Length: 318
Length: 251
Ligand SMILES: Cc1cc2nc3c(=O)[nH]c(=O)nc-3n(C[C@H](O)[C@H](O)[C@H](O)COP(=O)(O)OP(=O)(O)OC[C@H]3O[C@@H](n4cnc5c(N)ncnc54)[C@H](O)[C@@H]3O)c2cc1C
Ligand SMILES: Nc1ncnc2c1ncn2[C@@H]1O[C@H](COP(=O)(O)O)[C@@H](O)[C@H]1O
Image 1: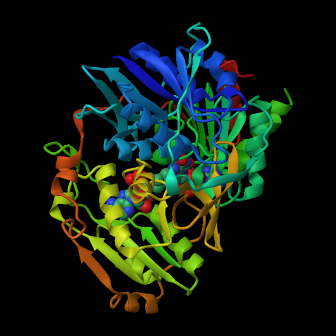
Image 2: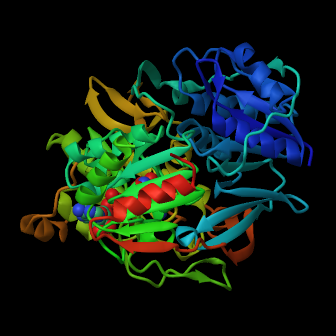
Image 3: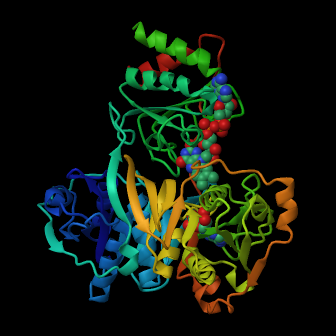
């Protein structure tokens, strides 16, 4: 399969889970190399190497510039200069989408998006769920430009390959002209305690059925009781009850915990694509027809305002 | 200030249609409605302009309901050659249409409800040689610069960008208004610039089925997840959750 480039993302010197997931797949399909837009490539070279990247092509500091135009410009220049990866894998993240979109224009090649699986069938074939995950479409590229894939988080399992430190190589960013004009002035991180939503073994999510913002406390209390993280449907994120960083679903986080508890969530397809990979699903909803029950291992038809307080009390008394 | 908003018409999500096995794309003979995702961009544009400037819609299907919300005019691209366009082909058409309007600011949604590739806005920006800020949850314009709170995995970044610039907005950023009766009446006489791809200088081979560059090799039913045990709460259903969590060794 030749060389496969994986877009590496990291914060505070720690490689993002999605990157490690992509590396696990890339090294199974071919020779995995990372591409990275940021200053601290040396700090992440060991972790990338351990997960199977032999090299990390890094741009260096972007001076506040956004990743998309810089990395797309650098990758297109490298390809024009003779680099010939057979595929470039991006995670479905903000920067992954930006870079893939810009690169697609530069290479005049399409992007295959929403990929949940990749197979080698005389060329890479991507699997994308449609119609709320009831149908899978398999797509491949017909042109001989490097295939650009946007892969959904949690599609593959991150696994150490026991490799040595990846060799850091410079990836030069060409003059971006006007496209590089957007600058990050400051970053704001929403504080949360307990395990991270996309890494927690237990996730308890609340939806519009909670009725009002204050009732989200029940969700947080249950998550805490079970040593898990609290999540939310988009309905209550849009309503301003909880921050976006808690959103589970197509446009939020993909979670695959051992146990997912949905309280007052209907189970719209866009929510379900973000959580139906969970090992076990428990749903509490007063509507017996709620779609969430079609995928729940245990479905409680009842009022969250009765079931949740009773459950919290029973757990507290154990 | 002149703001262009990309608005997509999509099959009614309540009746999403099906894949046509011969062409392997979505059958398009279903009822089209305004993608809710784009209603936020339209509202944002109306608020930013606030009567002092112009809001122009760019669309590939008639959009009277959006004109009725208050936009000033529309550019409508319609051409048979567009059928089957993928995200890049769509972006090429939108970019060429947007260029006609010479906007200061271009707004789109971060992703459409039916296509959800989430790549079209960034492709449009690149085609226009414009900077962009995607995933905006707050947008303000002052002194030729747009200031955006850009959603990130962990929180948000404060990003600034000189105009002209493209911004993609997330859902829920503003509360889209309902068209008033006056708006609905006024919409009927608003200018709609109808163009084909030849008017935009686009070759039919670059869009539609011909321009794809990708091929669907299989369509298969996905493995389904089975429903499990259902318990009607009679006041003691919490006990079943506790015992279930015990079985799972979570507690
Ligand atoms: C492009 C796009 C992307 C999207 N991305 C996402 C995403 O990432 N994540 C996401 O979650 N959604 C997403 N959505 C939105 C999604 O379609 C739904 O609108 C949303 O998930 C609904 O949230 P909800 O289940 O909380 O609310 P509702 O659908 O309103 O459901 C509330 C539920 O609570 C139940 N209920 C009410 N009162 C009680 C009570 N007292 N006790 C128990 N149950 C009660 C009701 O029976 C109902 O089933 C997206 C939509 C689009 C178009
Ligand atoms: N056919 C279209 N007509 C107008 N705008 C579009 C079209 N396709 C995509 N867009 C814009 O780009 C956004 C993202 O679309 P997508 O990349 O398909 O998820 C949409 O929400 C629209 O704002």
